[in-house]
Length: 271
Image 1 (tube, one colour):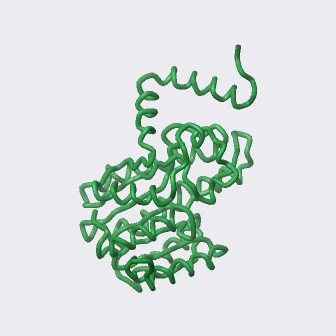
Image 2 (cartoon, rainbow, N blue to C red; image 1 turned 30 degrees about the vertical axis):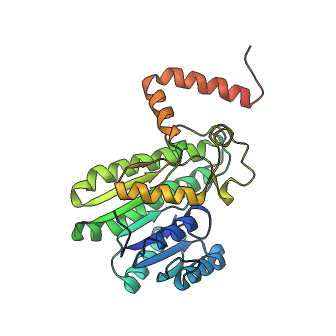
């Protein structure tokens, strides 16, 4: 997938990974960028759209629009797509990127579980419902769904995050299998720690300590390369693939190791 002359939607675009994707995609000269985020982020979203429209520092000017949208609400996702297509025409690429993270376990309130499910799973479902029919009719399209390495492995501080990210990857697999023959390509982005506002105050996490924190710009470069190759799993931290292979080779050994690691994290080191 070449991004030149493509009409691209990015959710969660006001900051972090979403903003980095928008700025990186702009260098590929797409025909339009549609930026979506929560109404509370409208100021930052409008400012980013203005930067893209005017171009800067050698970056070409790209037609861009901002749209306030809660991706956990299907009606708002449908409205986003309708507004984007009314202004720029059919969507070629939909980057379902919005996300959140809170610590939690099985005892977290149902509202926390529901919020994670809506943002990390149903938002991707709503995006697919909104754009797949048109992509299928045209015989081409691209879905980039942001998940996490936690969806391939796990996240000890947050069951709500890890479980919903596992589901996000399962959905992306389904969409790729179901619609590959329709000309629709799917990639799922699974980073570990990325230097964004989302991990502020969480840089002591195991992933960050073991494998480092990459910049959002480096991640965006990885995404462009992955989409160019139409790779399903986009892994900005390539060592994640090794971890997944070890997990699959001996699941019980992996679980035992994770238990021991969890005990050390909680200060209950086994002797």
